[in-house]
Length: 37
Image (cartoon, rainbow, N blue to C red; front, side):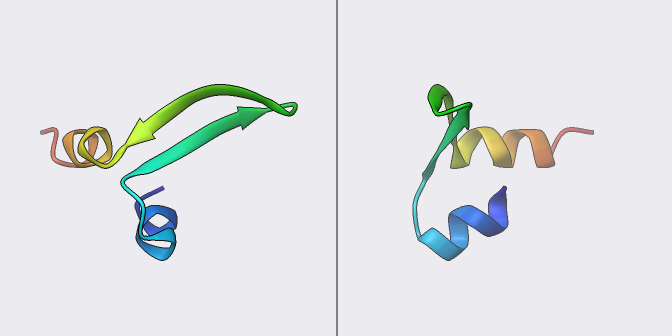
């Protein structure tokens, strides 16, 4: 996910399922998950 954000240069990525918006992931959420012990 972080690679996609970096490639698109966007702090947000939309989560889409079957053509509908399911949610949004932010860069801060990705970092928090990556840095969890």
